[in-house]
Length: 84
Image 1 (spheres, rainbow, N blue to C red):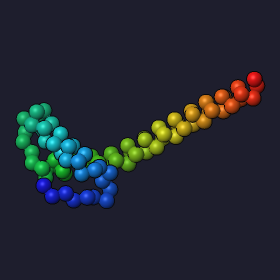
Image 2 (image 1 turned 30 degrees about the vertical axis):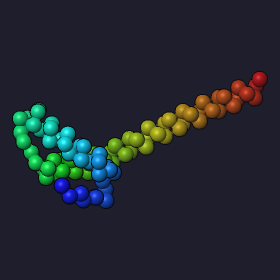
Image 3 (image 1 turned 90 degrees about the vertical axis):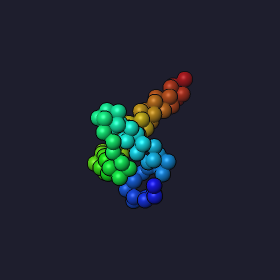
């Protein structure tokens, strides 16, 4: 299989190959259907393009929340130091 790096694809070559194997295995076991590498690539690309930005936005928002919570905890800790 030749490897074509897509500009929008965040996956490493190794991760992409693993996911393609998983797509092929899923169709074989869940639907008793054999699909080839090209079909698996089209399915994977469809989901990456369709869901990629949503997953990215969710990750950014989750990160913001963690940072906000850590900043609040730091503020409380600093206030406790001041009032000792």
